[in-house]
Length: 388
Ligand code: NIG
Ligand code: FE
Image 1 (cartoon, rainbow, N blue to C red):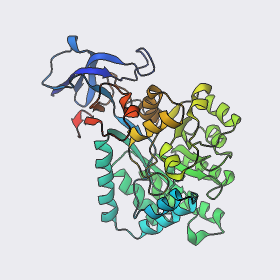
Image 2 (tube, rainbow, N blue to C red; image 1 turned 30 degrees about the horizontal axis):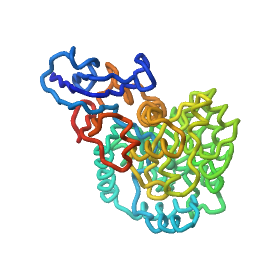
Image 3 (cartoon, rainbow, N blue to C red; image 1 turned 90 degrees about the horizontal axis):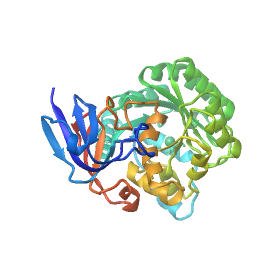
């Protein structure tokens, strides 16, 4: 077994609740990696010896980003829709059907090649854990293809057959829900850890969403919900009532939603790439944090509402537009994402955790927001192995 020491770290973000401050920052730090796990964390001057070393030259090191919400398996893109939105057209969930047509028409090899390019893109930007949802297939064969492809690259696969009602079920949404919770769930559950539903006007009603989530729960799947992206609704309270791990978007919240979240274990995942790309108002993270809600940040990387895979960009937007401090935004993109996936082995730099680390070409995590758009990620380790 070989050990590796990252030494001379100017500012180490640990997210260790045993250490001081939200981020548990250690200055002049070192981290020892042994067999893919963190074996020791402390001051550089008292670090143990190791088989090999990386000198971080005084720069900042953080836990790898945890992107708890993406839709990375799809065909085509929707650049024209983006151009039209920037010129004033509003976002409509119906655009999802454009990507469904392109995805159904793509071969496995085309989807796999695209997906592996995205996985490289994520690694280079410091994302070491990511979730992937299906939802651009919307028939039994296509959805099961998407969850199988996603499972080739991540353990965090989410079945989102209830993304929108596909054209062949137009006007018959309840019949489509029967398919989702019947044969489609049978085909997808073996490859998926999670089930998700888009609970919103134009997608699925509260009753339909409940049927989908309860069917997944009865198979032992964890629950996730897309809610209150385009307007107020009951989706957040449904997610809390059913014990969902995360409810995502949450741009339009009433006070009851905020209270319900604060009293629950459900993480509120904010996706600022969506507001950037749809020109909707950004969600009010300050209101949620002040109420005691656990907030995560994720990219929602998808070809329609948010075609970014950059967690650094999400952090910058959250600080600039959503009332988060740089420390809160970094926590939300690492430990917050881990909480949204109910993971304790990632999102923190603690002994026994998976050795997922990113080194910035900058002296502090603050630079992620302070220098938006600048590729600051210098080196990345996943389970102790250099991936960038
Ligand atoms: O997370 N909210 C639902 N689904 C995606 C949108 C996907 C699309 O427009 O293609 C989202 O924003
Ligand atoms: Fe999404």
